[in-house]
Image 1 (cartoon, rainbow, N blue to C red):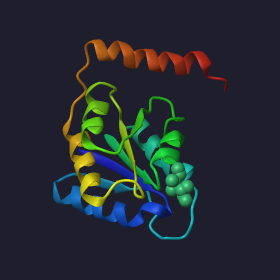
Image 2: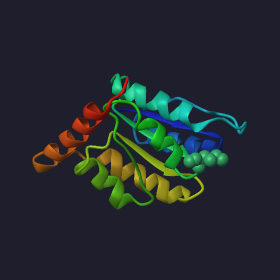
Image 3: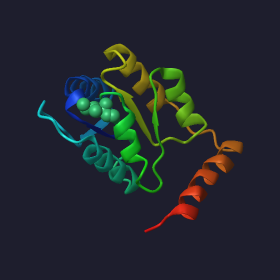
Image 4: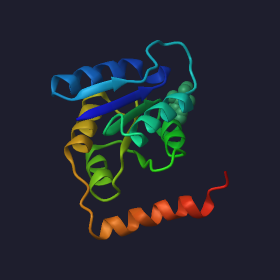
Length: 150
Ligand code: RB5
């Protein structure tokens, strides 16, 4: 499985450790940056990962900023992206199983390193359950289409 990963300056250290952890587990990880502690704007990296997921360059995405909130808000502006911000692994699994989330987001200033790894394991190891959940996910896409202004 190919996993896209992106982050802002608040999460470089966590991104590096998560990337090594996932590679060790056999995932192919595509790094969209940032890779230095220089202050950057999280929407840039949320969009990069989201576009890669949308274009199927990667299967799923992992995005990290200080809280996970800003970068997930940015990613969710890309059509067909469902980025879920979580702080523990049960929600990460359910985001995939029930909501067909294709990106998981979390905060480097919110969750510890071991919790972050557990979140990735839960998200990447789960499958969308379809069935009644498909109808609800379709309803989310329809909101997007009804309210698209471009
Ligand atoms: C950067 O200081 C911080 O605002 C960002 O990492 C994130 O937490 C935004 O949601």
